[in-house]
Amino acid sequence: MAFLSRHEDGSTLPRAPGMLDALFPIVAVIVMLALSVTLFGADSSAGPTQIALIMGAMLAAVVGLKNGHQWQAIEEGINRGIHLSLGAILILLSVGAMIGTWTLGGVVPTMIYYGLEILSPHYFYATACLLCALVSVSVGSSWTVAGTIGIGLIGIANGLGLSSAITAGAIISGGYFGDKMSPLSDTTNLAPASAEAELFAHIRHMLWTTTPSLILALVLFLILGLGGPEHVATPERITAIQQTLSDHFTISAWLLLPLLALLIMAWRQMPAFPTIFIGAMLGVVFALIFQREAVIGLADTPSLGHAMALLKGSWIALYDGYSAHTGNEAIDALLTNGGMASMLTTVWLILSAMTFGGVIERLGLLERAVSGLLRVARSTSSLILSTLATGLATNIVTGDQYLSVVLPGRIYKAEFQRRRLKPVNLSRALEDSGTITSPLIPWNSCGAYMAATLGVATLSYAPFAFFNLINLGIAVLYALIGFRVTRMSDDEQPTSDAELPTLSDGQIIDDQYESSTGRG
Image 1 (tube, rainbow, N blue to C red):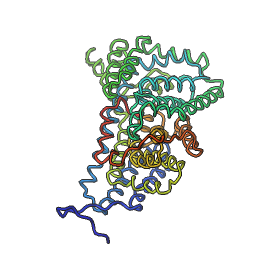
Image 2: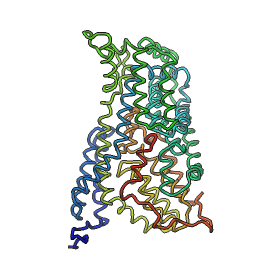
Image 3: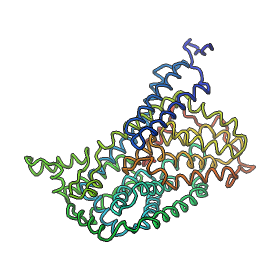
């Protein structure tokens, strides 16, 4: 048995993990996650996946203890992982509150009412994708897009009798186009920072994978829309839905002001948590102005005075959402949603994922597991492919989008520089894998957020997130054929290893969380 190294004061240093150490908990948790999905399907994220992730964290902790790590150090990794998730959790709870108050206040019903008039069912999926792309480029956040116009688009799709899964795929496709391309996006800034590339050079280099991906995605959404059933969204059905909405809510263009205010705040780079919470409180204000009967009805306490009933109804919408009783089962199912409480299962999922991710990041297990890829990545193509695979694997294993950008950047940056490949090659690969695959994984914070916000299971919408899937495929194709792989000129000098930043204190990611305008 090998002896542990020691500090000068005689305390022991933990051993570096071996490849078997690194692979054991990672493979175990992947197997358990696969079993969770196999046994429970779309319901796997309601508890089974959380158990698998916590068990994986315990297995990783056992490996760490075997190698001489103290439990305190392992617990620090857990605490840091959870700390990194707190921003996402607060945003998620605020979105739940906003969905409840926007429904009660008539904002969501108004979006559905006017959307049924404006949007053609045959072009709906493509229009939804393009609209979300334009807005996300403007505000730089796929999370904000999904939590605002995405909610309305899902409601419109249900009203038109269209697929909510395809609609969610279109929303995510458009949202993540802007998430990659907007200079306001946190990941668009984080990727070039990790690779030491210039921001706008990074954005220009991404055009080669992102533009064809969006075009192909729009074509597929057009095909799905044009090939849809002819019986959906008959004029009689649309009129009936609009009549029911107008019977139970005041419908007015004024009720779109909270949506406009939230998008302006996001565009001005106000942090996501206060932005969305302000949006939730605006929903309360508009409910008290336009929907007093609905607020009192939600309170359902005749003995209370008028003012107290209004207060109670508004309070219920914030924590428990809105419950519709229109007499139309389809519309009731559409409008009964929201509240902070509706997000608690998703919060549980994020905490479990970040617990596992925090342990394996603290113990260096994931970094050790992928380090072998560098030894076999002898060609430029295999190096880029390894980077793409590591970004995807990090999203799967750690459940965090930011780690999937920063960790591969940390691992591969020196090798890209040694081979005199421009930093934009690395930064583009980080976005083509880490950024866009995050919403496709149920236990990833992005996948959990999208499922909870849009009300569609991750595994249901993932096959229709065409932009995300195509973008990764094009990135792999470019790597294989060596297309748009740029090299340093003779007068360009790589950064020395001594100048390369590390993640030993997690400061890069912590800073990004503090300054982000919105997750995703």
